[in-house]
Image 1 (tube, rainbow, N blue to C red):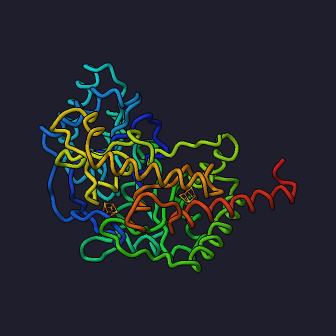
Image 2 (spheres, protein in one colour):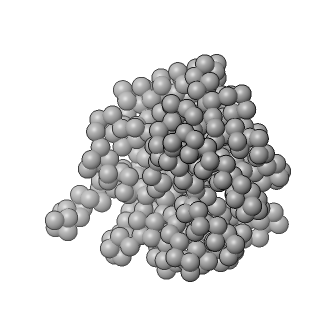
Length: 379
Ligand code: SF4
Ligand code: SF4
């Protein structure tokens, strides 16, 4: 995905990604959403059915986080969420559930009114920002091709002034790889202490990645080495998701890691028309809908032929990963959407994305730790 739903820092047992609208007010060059120019919204009927079908299900475990995403969540008015959150709360009470909400936003439409709503409902926020303006504005542009960095920073400023914590998600392109210092320093100087990144993957409407075959992997390794040196210089002032998740796997992980994107019903995705899938949200853009919440509880997915076929293929791909990949304990079998969009099927193992975002990352991180241990700085 382009801005991978940012759920990594949300504390959930079940993540439900909801599409309030197909529309996005900007037009990033790597966006995978095909209908982002169309303003179709989730109806009240679909909202009611979505909350009921999820919260009534025994497949779902508390706490449940509803992440509003798959379009720009702030491009619908605040009253949309006042209503949706009230329906969600009433439904959660009925089923004795613990729920919360999150926005994954480009932050360009942030305003005092949104800040008030976010604070009142304790909405968790993830902001998409790709680094300093000269990197961000090459790809995160509006429909006239103008950079959006200044608007994003205004939105971030409103969050910071209000004392609302947030995590950042960014997308690395080939261009970013030449600028690790500027990339890292941006987050330090902007006071953003928590960032995760993805690479611009081939997915949905984004049919080309700027990451070429081998040379990009080597350049990515150099980028990450310099990023880690920079982070060491700042004593880890910015928490980089890719470092911490792999360190946690190394320090605390077992031999059977769980990857939420390839284990069924840890993530449930519901589009504005009620179409539903499990596994990665990106499957909604690739004709892998596994039912509709208007037809009843999400448990019905278990008998859906798409779920049966895709679920079996995903499980075969995960088994292949476990049998063949020495990075298994860091990864747990990768993201099905990467496998599908790169290979046209799910029962495969390696992808370009995992070669860079997982394997190269782990290699660089282990070398970094060895080097620091050798310098006597790890004790
Ligand atoms: S902000 Fe997100 S949804 Fe909007 S165009 Fe960019 S990547 Fe797509
Ligand atoms: S790194 Fe790639 S090949 Fe290895 S387990 Fe993950 S997805 Fe599978």
